[in-house]
Length: 289
Image 1: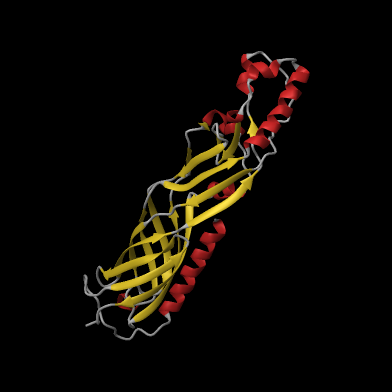
Image 2 (image 1 turned 135 degrees about the horizontal axis):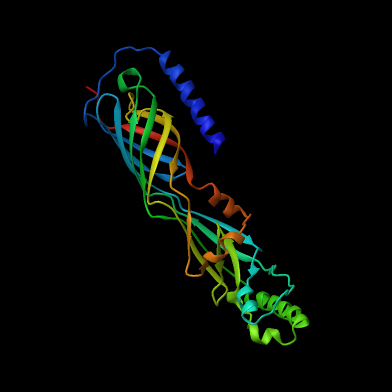
């Protein structure tokens, strides 16, 4: 993420020097709501459309929407058996078992980024008609950043339970009959939370962030181009807060013991800032005066 902001600062510096060196010939001036631009967008917040209008000489207002229909499918075999409370309840101490299930859990992670945005561009050069711009504003949408659901094989899990019960009975004869180990004793890690399986061997959880997310970035290209058609490039980041894991089967008491290392957990670790890189084709709808 530090590299991302280093690139952002470098692009800002280059754009300033480039813009200052360009011809400052008189150009049409735009006033409040004097023109309209329409753009088609594609970037890390999805594909969508934006409508733009001047707020004055140096500022443009942009409002639009986007969708990101993306599902990341992956498999984790880091399913862990947690029967510590049951062992403590029956006074079984120093029980040595391999609590890693070694059973695959097939998961779908559906990514949901903000659906709408309201942004203001500041174009400091060429009397507000320059290409370089600084952008700030808000992205808004649901708080569910990622929806994770999936399942595992109950047959394979039962085979693993039979092996574990045999290991426990070898140390405490007859203990497995009291412990009643079942599918709901298994969990996997998501973010910094432990998520237990339900009785069907399924998983359902959400990674929630702020529903309103401030944005800051820079770019090249005017939202209302001087020519009829123009192109824009933007780079920046949305601040959405630390993801919070919610699930009907979450166990927050295991937070200090969870240490996920799969790809999804790596994404959640750095998800407070969502990078935004977008390309846009823009069309000026009205003729400048």
